[in-house]
Image 1 (cartoon, helix red, strand yellow):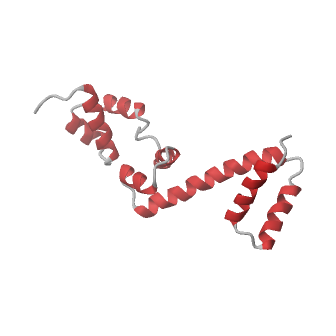
Image 2: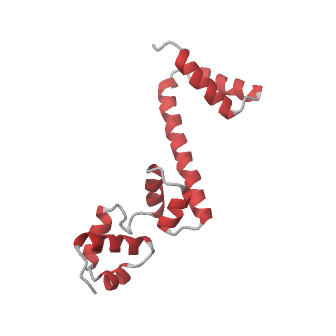
Image 3: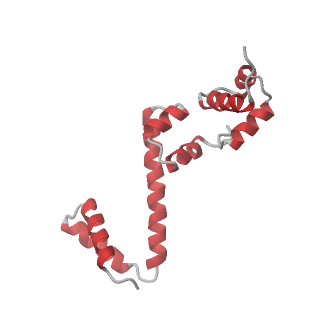
Length: 141
């Protein structure tokens, strides 16, 4: 068999890791030391000590689809979808926190607006559209 160059060996280590191989299995198949494996995976952001949720969230932050994530990390579809929901929940919490920091001195106008919209039966998509329109027409200040 022809010897692999460094880039090919790194790609093999990453592929084996993403397919769930252990360090021992990667060591035998790629003919590299555990320290080399760790260095390659660290550089790729895929160290096995990194939690699966961290790896999933990183992929979602790169705009990967649940299908991409399931294939890349060998997850079942239910797991990929659950992590996807958690990812967006975290994003929404972050967005809410940004809004809260802007309105913290007087959150009641925001709360009243939300209550008014909910009580009137306006769908979430319609609210978003109204806010986009208002954002384009309200004075900045």
